[in-house]
Image 1 (cartoon, rainbow, N blue to C red):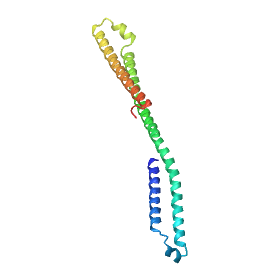
Image 2: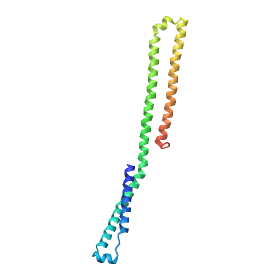
Image 3: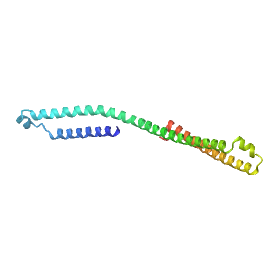
Image 4: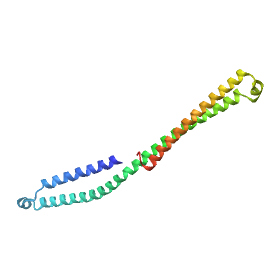
Length: 170
């Protein structure tokens, strides 16, 4: 839209410059007016009125174009804000999906690998207890790291969204 406005304004300026050149080229001299029965002077008057009409139209269009152009920055900011919101929302969804998958994997692993019966049957077996402890620690460590990553990512995204909404980084 900005490009179209600029192109239209440029065309009008060229048209005004052409009309001004034509007006300067036309002359209403006494002998010329007498020989052409005043037609030469009428042409100058028509050219002058046409130039004035184009200038009046252009001044109105120029005022409107300036107002619109002043607001275009606002709309550009809104478009950029929408892009930031979409990007951050997509990233947040991806991060939380990853956390969800890790939580499901941890739950599935604990539920399938360490049933109540297996724990009761092998509770006094030292190897089982060590395997159980290591597996439990590894599962919770992975889950804890993913939680930390998710919290950090959410906080960073919150800061970027806040800055975008108040116009800091637009």
